[in-house]
Image 1 (spheres, protein in one colour):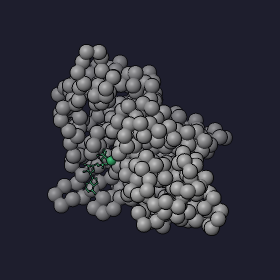
Image 2: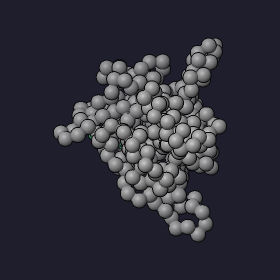
Image 3: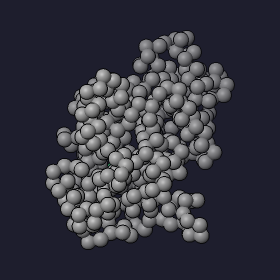
Image 4: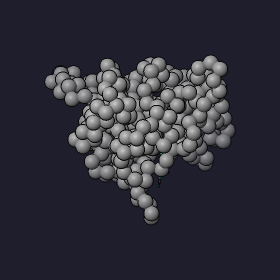
Length: 363
Ligand SMILES: Nc1ncnc2c1ncn2[C@@H]1O[C@H](COP(=O)(O)OP(=O)(O)OP(=O)(O)O)[C@@H](O)[C@H]1O
Ligand code: NI
């Protein structure tokens, strides 16, 4: 959402534009679930990009729409869910939201791979870990037999599994939780993806193992120039992994910034609340704060700020007008969807700005 008109036109005239194009560009993604009684706007008009070799974090409390975003990118939304036709997800120069199931199959794994929270949802208990990696290698790289076995062992070594030549013949239940997640990452790498989506990949693991898996992902990214979308509800993890952060709330991105300014100067009251709720981040002497209340289910179109009922800074207009992503100050890379911004304007002026941007598009 920081794609300002000038950036776009200048990159088009540049010879190296394609090399600098983002690996993945999500624009105005809307994913709706039609249930018997309501329409749930699980992802409600979000835009972000992942550049090559970059890790973009998507962070927010439970129910904010992170996993639906990931599943939308991979073409895994099933009835009663639907991606609105006005949405676009560009990968390799094409809008993949228009892909058929067989076209999606051709990019899943090869182009965009995913690592889930629970490795057992990816690993099949009845096949050895090695055979599952070899299956991926055969499908995506055309490798079979001894060459595939050799490559599977290499991949297990690459993800830090000791004694890989022996473990390649073992079953998932013979692996510990951390080793299983490493094996899943090896499977994802077997497809040599450009983009890796990690949905809470460390949430089920204890803290030490969690740190090891994060280190592994960062190493692999540097070696393979991977673009990573890292989904978590944990601000502490985001601080370690992300180059850029998108904060999600009730289907919307409420703040977007490179990681340093996001932590140093969070602008959206929701981000400020999330940061106060991580141990060690609150001002000394304060008790650990959590944000009161829960993420509402976005079952109506946004006609107000969805965070307003929980927001300590809310004023009347917040419940009457939906804010749009806005530059918060001088940094064009730092946006917040909040009526408090742009900060240099008076509240009335800012409200008017959001009103007209909401009618005619974004800022
Ligand atoms: N199949 C479905 N049918 C109806 N609603 C759904 C479906 N899948 C997700 N939702 C709704 O979409 C919203 C976003 O869910 P999502 O799983 O993306 O949240 P999340 O941010 O990943 O949360 P968590 O941190 O708990 O994983 C929620 O309100 C959820 O109830
Ligand atoms: Ni989720």
